[in-house]
Length: 369
Image 1 (cartoon, rainbow, N blue to C red):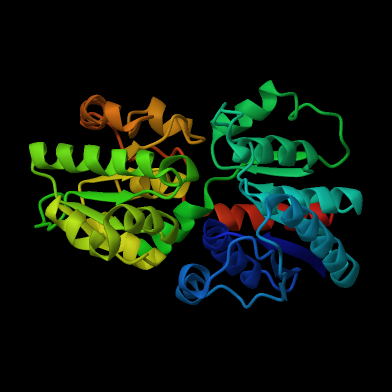
Image 2: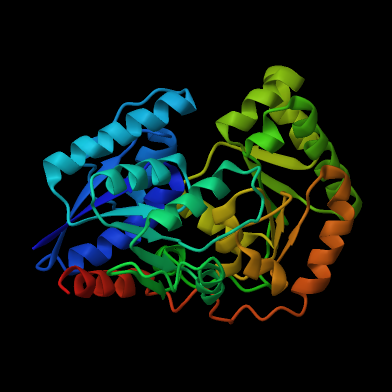
């Protein structure tokens, strides 16, 4: 029996861990999992509810860490090192590109435990993003690199990782865990002809968009103006980080202010609610990495409210368009509508919806080699 120490620390990683854990459970005679939450981002509203919705196994090890990012990195590394001493895993599994991902990879490397990186090979090519540093460094430390797409494998080849002469190195395009989850919980996308009460699903939560009040309000005003001109009704589940700036600008009446601007503000939504809303709306406007893909899975075009994205396949194929600043909204939305009109959503860019199955089977073989 082999043991995996699986690391999560943020809400998107819980979604990925859910699909992965279900596949582990189906192969429990071969492999066991110990689940560790670093505490990087945790609240019952945003994380606890998600665990319940997706049927994620209970967390075996819960770390308590500082809010300061520098202190937190060290505390997470120490917590993972302690867990390695206790659980004696045959490998550590990390997801994506958070500080938790890199902290666990560094800890495993120092303890000489193999690292399995799920969502390897992604690049935004924007070194200003801390996530980009985390991706690059984690890929360099990893022994098994599971890529969501062939283009991610190609990127690792360009960086010399695929041909690196490291014992046991494995690089595979296995598909995207979030497609597994969306198919399992989301069912079939709603037909375009059904009656809808909202046109656009909007999310804003990245520090670059919401931490400076002037920038946040710039986005809100541009979105409101564009929605009015084009007759769009915007559904906006508001992240706690974003709500802070809205209250500072408009006080406790911020919800009514947004509603007057044709923006329907809601409480932060669970994953299953987001999937239902994706069936209802025509488009997604977001600065979330995960929601860009979920829009694609549900056959909805996405306007990415960022300067860059790690999901470059979506831009290249016309399923999404970048909008770096609020002043570019009109032009970017026009570009999206033109490209999405001819986009083929049946392309298997991110696999067949059985990524977790492929990963676990590959890992069992690799661990017993």
